[in-house]
Image (cartoon, rainbow, N blue to C red):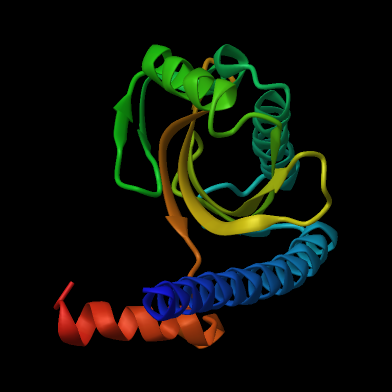
Length: 210
């Protein structure tokens, strides 16, 4: 009986040690990726956005529009850091479409405010969004597409996790720029994955066909 209990304890301890090692390896890799992504965002901040426009010939107007789009984006980030769902949603049009990284499609400023306030009060409590516009493509005088690289800071720490790229449709109504459409995608390049994540992706693809 004692021998059997001893074997069970050895197996249980081995499992705990193995899981602990995996968690330690994951945290190490995650912190390494976050540090690298933080450097990338700092470089993007210094560089500023690439601006493409075949429709706006007045450079002064173009510069003003670019500055305004950058401004509302950063103010929206500040609203996230303040955990204010209503303020966050105020930078979207009344009928805006918001598609999150998991495919959830939220329609309308009111729903965007409500859903984000729920997140700010729970899963995203004590977080801050940091990001910068990488590219702005003007489709006309009142419409542009802005591509943003961003990530999440947790509990006041400098490291930026969850690297993402977002596509924004920005429209100008009555002289005011607002986000009309938003689509978020996580940056998860296969070449940058850890061995564990690559292995899991391989199992999903080749074994479970998912």
